[in-house]
Image (cartoon, rainbow, N blue to C red; front, side, top):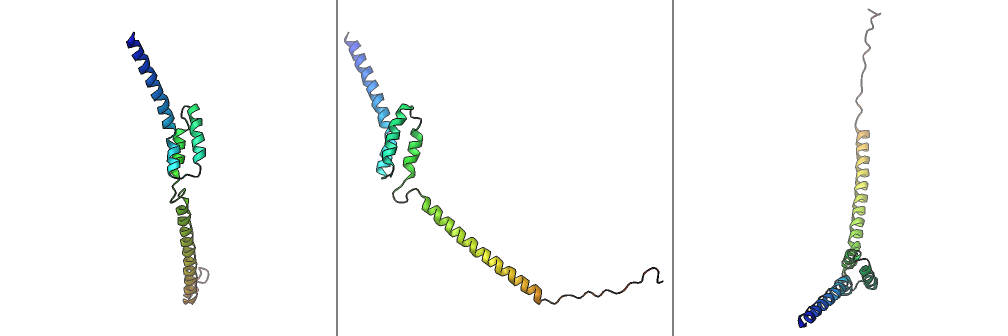
Length: 128
């Protein structure tokens, strides 16, 4: 009879550990967001609770959402904007250089003496 109580206690203990383990696991993205001072940490927390009802189908997306933000660089998009601005500036300079070179080639062609073609009159068959 006492063995039945030990088995029941063990079963209840395992069920509680699994239950609280799932709750702790679902809260990992929120803890990451809180640690990184994420601007959407409340939304991540609420979506984590909603994810419990969808059998954690949203959980991988929450993980990605929480880890994208870093306080020192934000979403990381400013670096991309800077690179695009630099590329735009380089392309503008290259276009100006191509235009200058095209104008120089046109000036060189105009200043070059034109070869004159002297066409000698040929005898036609009727003249001979």
